[in-house]
Image 1: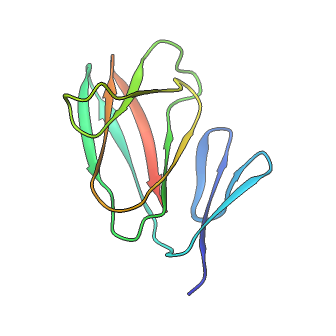
Image 2: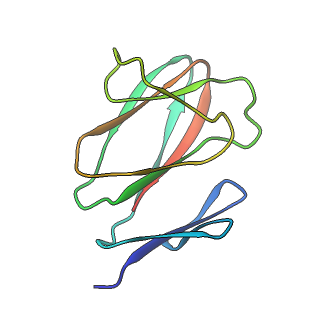
Amino acid sequence: MPAAQLQISSNNIVNPVGGLSIANLTLTALNPISVAGSFVFGAPGFQTVAVPAGASWVIIVPPVTNTTVGLTLKGITGDTGIPLDMNGPSVIALAGTGNIGITASAAITVYYSFT
């Protein structure tokens, strides 16, 4: 089975089943899967997405123009969480299934892709 890669360019997911390239960094997944989607916030709030079986990492991509909406990575709504960069991609290596949650401080659309 070929390895999966994910490529991004200018903070946009270009090819969910290709290669991930950030500057000189390339990440390769042993189990090629690809599940992409988005968190669409019409107002401040919390949303989750299930980590698909076999996913090696997730990349979370906010709009490059975002300079005001705070984003926090959480497991559940009550977590303190980890603040994410407002306009840069976040790549997170995964060790199993579960849920990934995002809290947004205002209306925004944030894209994600599991590979």
